[in-house]
Image 1: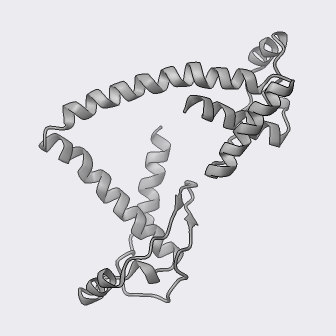
Image 2 (image 1 turned 180 degrees about the vertical axis):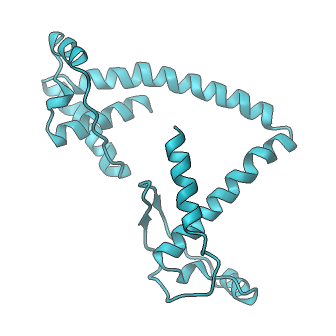
Length: 189
């Protein structure tokens, strides 16, 4: 879990020129993807807001290049996160957030084990039910735009899976593997 956090810090630190002098305008309403595969929607600010930004010698996000916009969005996200946690403790929400995080973790664990496990089981069946489950998983990934990361399971695990009539995820086609992964995510949610 530390590597995505570290990668985010390096991404933001390497793109710290978000509030420098204006550069050539970029096309508005472009969606960009960072190296962390996070899709950043470009939202156009109203003219009243951009006029105030220009009055104060600040860059207009509507005219930023893709790299500048990524840095701008990253700085906004980082600033929000840096003030969210300390702010929660100053306002007394820290204990409530701790309880909520504990409940959310427990709920996620139960969902992953029961819902995700059931979806994985059904998606690895080599029948019509398995085909449907993989189809729904593929639809989820296509809709959300998530990449399926492929992990090979140990042979001891896949042997047991094959003994109970399940397909071996290590030998699935790319399309079937994406469906299997999507079904696991859908079942967890």
